[in-house]
Image (cartoon, rainbow, N blue to C red):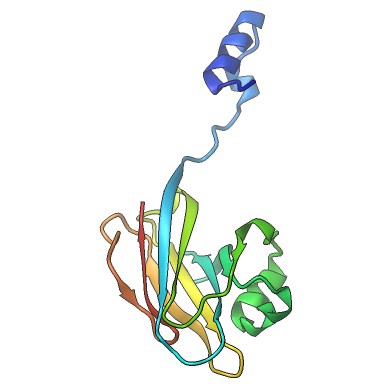
Length: 164
């Protein structure tokens, strides 16, 4: 059985409990987003990459997704790994397969609406075994007007784009 917020409010009103007392703060509104990370057609092993949120000051906020299932290779994403060690986060639900050269990853996210048009960015850090690592392979600010635009990467990422 599923009970909606309005159903809880009706029950609360019937028993005389203030809805405000039950819900002191409404949850932040989430906006569905799709992020596409297209890799260049490079030679070599599949890439591991992290997609994370950066605040308006350019500082790490939160990991949104990790490409690559084997945790033993996560330390190769050196900058992201340092951020994660300072602000540990459960990663099980936000990981996927590593991505081969020329392939793309499509990531579905729920983003807090307050992040959009507020100076927050998506950043991609990439690593390929026995090749260069790119701490800021691609970065794009989350803006309403920037949807669907391709932002070029500087390493393994050909481009990143998103839409809400």
